[in-house]
Every structure is written in C-alpha cells, then in structure tokens.
Image 1 (cartoon, rainbow, N blue to C red):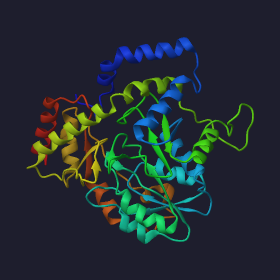
Image 2 (cartoon, one colour; image 1 turned 120 degrees about the vertical axis):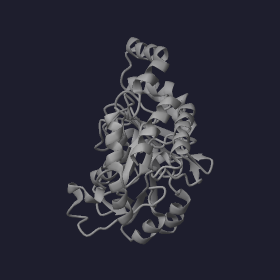
Image 3 (cartoon, rainbow, N blue to C red; image 1 turned 180 degrees about the vertical axis):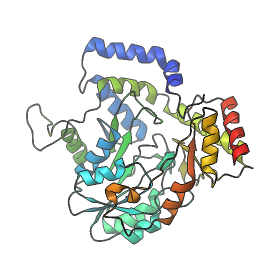
Image 4 (cartoon, rainbow, N blue to C red; image 1 turned 90 degrees about the horizontal axis):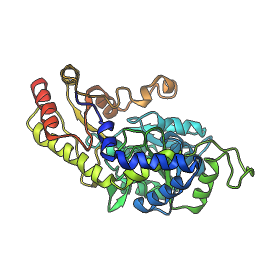
Length: 363
C-alpha cells in the first residue's frame, strides 16, 4: 500500500521531539495564544522574509481575515482562479465581495495574467492568485496589472510554503498572504491551522484583533471579530517541522523529478516547471486521456491517487447562478484529465518505480 501522503512516517521521524514538545505544552498549561504561538509567528516571519505573521485557526480563516483586513467588502470584485479548492472563493463571499473567475495557464495551471488583465473593472479591488500545487504563480506579471489600477494582491499560499520566486518566498509579495497547515500540506500540523503574512503594521494589528473577538486588549472590543486562534499544541508541532521545511521540500522535488525521469517516455503529460521560481510539489499532477483507467490500475494495487480538482469552482452548484454563462476552456479541460500521484518526503525510490511501472502499463 502506498498512500497519497505518509503522515505516520514523518511523525515517527520526529516522534521524540514532537512528543516532548506536546508534553511541555500540557505541563505549562498555556493553551491559548501561548509562547509557542508567539515564537512560531516570529520564526515564520523570519523564514518568509516578512515583518509580521499572525496565526489563525485554519487556511480558510487566513483567507477570510486577510480579505477583511485588506478592506475588501460588499460591492467589491476579487479576481481569482476557478481551479482551486473552494476555500479561496468561500472567503471572498464571507466578506460580501464577488469572486470573478478567470482561466488558467495551460502549462502551469496557475491563473493566467492575460485573463486577469481582461477582467479588471472599476469594481476590482483585489487579485487573489493561488500558487497551485506548490508552483509560484507569475506575481511580477500580476503586479504590472494591479499597480496601475491600485488593485491589491492577496496571495493564497496554502500549497506553497517554502516555494521561492525571484529569490523571495511566496507569501512575501502581497498586501496580506495566506497559508494552511492542514496535515497533508508541505508544512502541516496535526489538525487545522493557518497563518497570514504581511509587511503592513496596520494590517498586522487589525489581524491580531480580528482573530481574537475583535480585541487587542483584554475585554476591550473595538469591532466584531472571530474566534480564530492558532492552537498552542499545533504551534509547538509547526515549530519543529519549520526547522526541516527546506529538507522536506527538497525531498518532494527529488520524488517529482524521479517521477519525471521514469515517465518521460510514457503517454502522460508531466507537470511543467516554468523556471520562474522553485516548485515545491505539494501535489504531483499529471494529465492523460486515459485517466480513469490509470487510476483504477493504481487503486487495484492499493496505490493512492486523486483528482484535484474534478469540478471547477464556476461549475459548482453554489456558483451556478452567477456563472451560468461563464466558459473557462483550459480549466474545464484540465478537470477532465488531471490526476495526482503519491508524493511525500519519505517516499522511497522503490515505491516511485512501482507507481510508474503501473502507469506505463496502463497509459
């Protein structure tokens, strides 16, 4: 059996450190916004090369709070991709704004800057690109579109912790940028968790208030906020894993490049690295007209595989009325033939070879 991600293998690798850190949290009993949360925020800001980070309860909350702190609200349009997890668009709805879906680049699967430029109107307040599957999107091209129109960029980095672009980390370009620590992420905790990065002191202070019931001073509430605090136990785990994130990401790249070598002569379309930045392969995603047959062959051998994403957001029932006349041909084609293979830092060459042998027989 080969799972999509082997969380147990990573836990056993770090077991003594993690167990010790968890027992320390229990012994200290500082469970809410404790010392590990504060330390992790400082360490993450240093790693990302930003002035501030704010931990929160989930990646979805990170998106929601970032949009609100950036002043996005009713009557505003936010341009984003339809080829992503629904949280990206949910968060836009949470603040009362409208998600404007545009098509993606046919090679990288990231948002297409030309499509973004064509969608800009006087209602556009923000562009929300997703660094999909761990590959940085073309931020420079988006900045050229956004700056003249005074449109803000808010990065969705849920899948790209540790990815670099022009020597900088994803999450260091936008006005506020959002990370998820869902267990299967490149940097994952053992539950839900999220983070927002920013260089703006004003946004930082607003986020600190928003995540804690609209309060920056105990029992003083200046606005309606949320209960969205990163858990102390999760922060303790993340601090340990953050020390190894570059190693973990390099191992993901090893697995991906080995897949590339072994599948180079097969009838599947391999992931594309555009050279703009460092792809950290949160997912290793292929394309094939024989997707269903290949996936069945993998499943028959108890090998994990999945489709990210089988239904584009503009085709989801929840957006059906708003998007009934919208056509995104590249996105729609991708939903029909993409599929992802197991990828995790601990994956052995033997397992990689086994997976690719099945694909080559089925493709």
